[in-house]
Image (cartoon, rainbow, N blue to C red; front, side, top):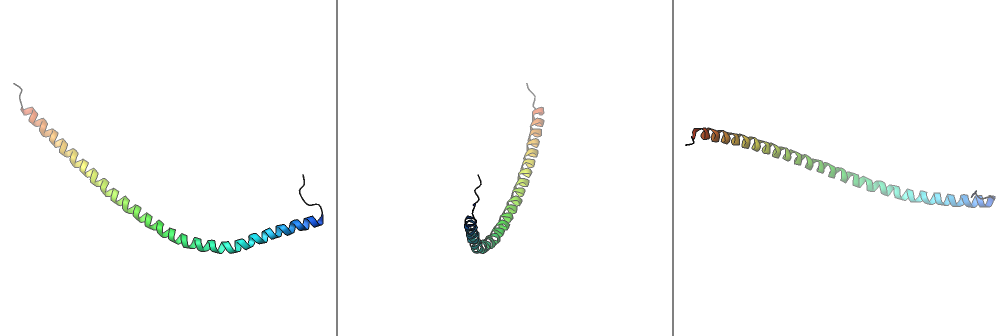
Length: 100
């Protein structure tokens, strides 16, 4: 039930193993953390530029689609008034005809 070492020698051995593990982890971290910060520094800068370019492209697309939307609305507006004029002229011509 209790996994702790009983004797002093067992406790010392256990502490030595823990110390070796901690020291080994510290050595790895002291090597890997500077590498990680260098890599992050390089890629964050590149990703920031990529993000800015992407946002600029999206804004360009949004302005283009806004212009296209205005053109489509203008087209439908012109088309509906043309159709209305055609219907009115057809109705006026129809009323002039007499059925014999």
